[in-house]
Length: 115
Image 1 (tube, rainbow, N blue to C red):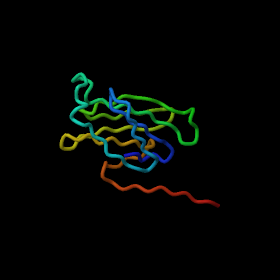
Image 2 (cartoon, rainbow, N blue to C red):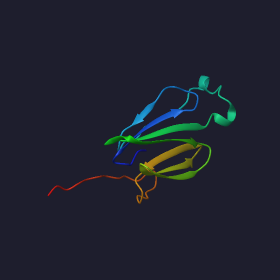
Image 3 (cartoon, rainbow, N blue to C red):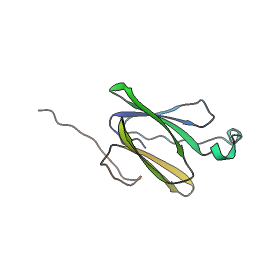
Image 4 (tube, one colour):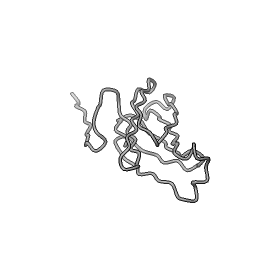
């Protein structure tokens, strides 16, 4: 779930080349086919993320998530919080701006006012 209004998220399972792009304020469901589970066991549940600022492509960061455990990662440039939650053996990854604290199932909307 990408709740960040300015970041584009590229997600790739460790050992695979297929990228999954999640645009700002969108979701994406990812899974791995059984034939792709031939990766070393400790690396099977790794997801590589690259976060790119939609307005400044020079502002980007890459990280690797362990999908077998919960985590919260705070990034500075670009500013974001990545949360990994587990529900019924499914990892739910949320990318949000700092200060936004919602449950994975909560709805969020963004808006702006022009004067």
